[in-house]
Length: 263
Image (cartoon, rainbow, N blue to C red):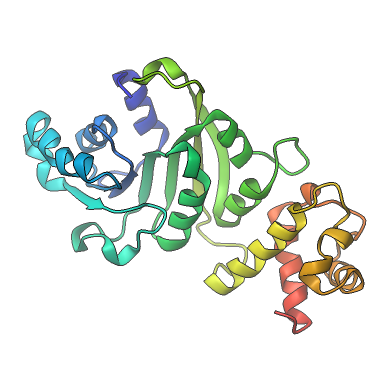
């Protein structure tokens, strides 16, 4: 990404509080890193490429020598990185601003939301189609598993578009910005156990999009009859389809399943 105006717009769209530590994934050559440091934010950058990871501190020392101490670089796969791998000085980032790799954007996003509960705000650039899916409301054409799972953690919205011309080399797709504001007071249990239970419901509901929930959840519940009873207990029409449900309904289904002692 070589356009400074776009980089500044991304930093601005993140709505960062003064001095917040920012997690950046895939910093590449460091254009976004420099902008974040220039805005007064300590940055912990996770980069899978050891060559790029090794070069980033030199880039910062060259272009912003006074800010070099505010940068920490972790050479790791963002899809597998753990909080314990972050340096002590940057272990609890409050925000994430990143240009996510298109082919793993959703898994990386969900992993980091789970692994780093200190993340309050996330502003990510992803392929435009992925951005649409993440921010899609229930019942829309693009609503699906990514939309529902992202909504488990917080409020998700589209935060703008980025044309392909600002990149070099120029990709064959446009990009979109997505902002996630984590719930300050989660409306449901966000423990790992409960999250896994809710995500299992979501995966099952969307595994057969054209089928009713009673049919789609049959394997997950043990039978279509059991699925129907769980749905009824959750106050949801068994003839409804998964793409019509919001995250609150998926949470209710998981809770009803748990209440029956089947988790």
